[in-house]
Length: 323
Ligand SMILES: [Zn+2]
Image (cartoon, rainbow, N blue to C red):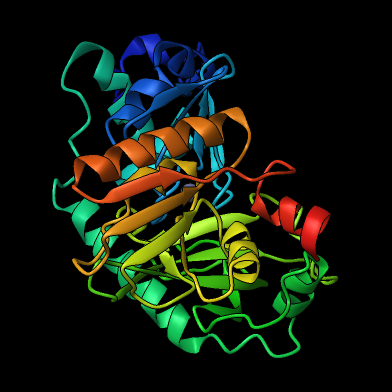
């Protein structure tokens, strides 16, 4: 051990300074990240829920080749030392000391096991607060966005407009507010438990700065209710498709899951007896629709699949055949 730094000699250069390159070469960023979040392989990267900001869709990526991380949600990014500093709330020197120790002795202390639950509860509270602050769409950028997709009339109250941040940190620091369409995610009992944010640019198009779609709070089991509770629900994989189906089938009650992945997982209230699954036409959409029909049949509901007749989804069918 070196007297001044407390680091093993292996991680000191000839002048007694921290040999950052060597320390980084000896430390796996994936291993450190995996202590804080579940990672799945995704192309050449590993992906998971960001351990640095509350979210329900995975925006956190590890590039093992480059040994760096990046979060598309909160824009955090850097090397393993930076990640460790943020995860453990320690300074650079302490991070180096801890990481230098991982190879030979104890792994870094584990996250408080209660923390994920606390973060989830906090993200639901935040989602509800943002939802309460949002306004009816009026003549907003959300109205422009929907009008450009042929969906601007008779928009239900579960869609609102607001200016919201993309990310927050534990210290309360938040990202800049950007215009966004908000959709309320309601649970089985009708409580708003999350929101989906679709970020818009100044012309009312989907924002091209980072991921335009982020959800906050709970998504699993929840749906955007574009119509009332009814014995038959038409279920789509996106809010836009839902608005299109609503215009194509006046009087039908349409709900939207947020993404193919959620299509089979909506918890319907007991009144619902029949689900018409309106998934996308592409391959992931077809797989999700099949899984959804199967899941709802297993729950004792009547379930059937209604694919779009034209285009890759119902918003396209609406624009091609009806609008
Ligand atoms: Zn993040």
